[in-house]
Amino acid sequence: MSPATFTSIQFERPSDDVQREDPFFVPERDESGMRALSDLTSRGVNSTSSALAQSADHVRSFFEMLRAELGFYLSCLNLRDRLTAKGGPVCFPDPASPVPADAGHARLSARGLYDAALALSLDDGQAVGNDLDADGRQLIMITGANQGGKSTFLRSAGQAHLMMQAGMFVPASSFAASISTAVFTHFKREEDVTMEMGKLDEELDRMSVIADQITPGCLLLCNESFASTNEREGSEIARQVIRALTEAGIRIIFVTHLYDLAERYYAQHDPATLFLRAERQPDGRRTFRLPAGEPLPTSYGEDLYQQVFGPADQAHTARA
Image (cartoon, rainbow, N blue to C red; front, side, top):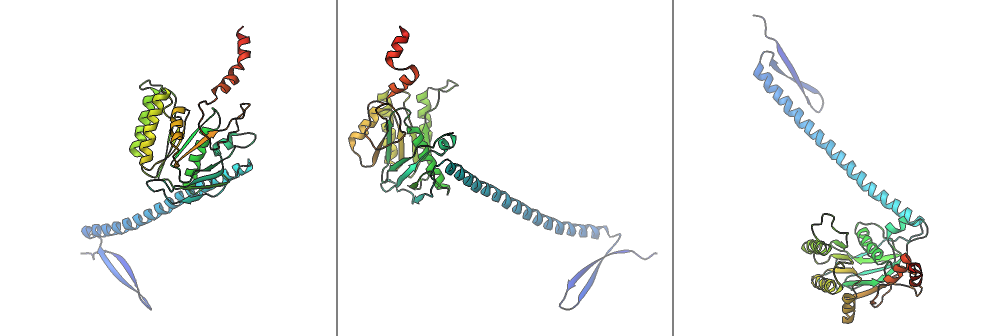
C-alpha cells in the first residue's frame, strides 16, 4: 500500500526570541476533517468580513452625516452672504430657557426683524425691519391695514424662532426669545378643490389637529384664522380657541381683521396681551411697520379698491 498523503497546515506562534512552527496535518482523504477545517475557516473569514463590513458602514455613515452637516453650515454661510449683500442685518440670537406653563416670564424682543425669504426675493431695496418688545406677553394680536405687512411680520417671527433653535443666525439687528418646544402655524388656505368640506370646516379641522398635538411652551402662529365665516361667529370661535390655548400655557401671535375679536381683547387691558397695528400714512401709503396701537374698525380695504378700480369719481365717469 502506498503511503498516505497528508495536507499540512502550519501555525506560527510568536515567542520572545524565536518563531516556532507547529504543523497541523489533515489527511488528504479525511473528508470529515476537511469539512471541519473548512467550517472553521469559514467562521473565521465570516467574522473578519462582518467586522470589516461593519467598519466600512460606520465610516461611510460618518462621512454621509459629515456631508449633511457641512452642507447645512455651508448653506447657512451662503444665506448669510446673500442677506448681507442686500444690506440686511444678521445677528446671533439670545435664547432663553423654555417658558413655564403660565408663560409670564417668556421672552420675545427684536430690533430690525425682517422676513429673510422676502429679502431674497426683492430685486431692488431691502425688506423693512420691525421692532418688537413682547417680554412676558402671551398673546400678540396684530391688526391694521390690508397689505400693511402683517403676514410678513408673522412669517419673520416664525423664521426667527426656527433659525434660533437650529443654532443659526437670525435676520435682525438683535433677537432674544424663549425656547419653544414646538412651533405650529394656522394660515388660511384656498377653497378645498375636492369640495369635501367648506373653508370653515377645513380651518376647524386643522385647528383640531393642532390642539391634539400642541403642549405648554409651544408657539402658535395664526394668520386670519376663522375669517371664512361672518365676523360675529368668527370672533366667538377665535375667542374660545385663544382662551383655551393661553390657559394651557401656549403663546400665540394672531393676525386678524376681526375687529370684534381684537376690540374685546383690547378692552380687557390684559398686561399679557400686546397689540400691534400695521401702519398707514394719511395718503394711503404703507410703511410696512407695526408699532403698538389700538385696533381700528377698518382695514382700509377702500385703498385696495381704488388701486384696482381707481378713485370713486373716475369709476363713476367711466360708467357714464
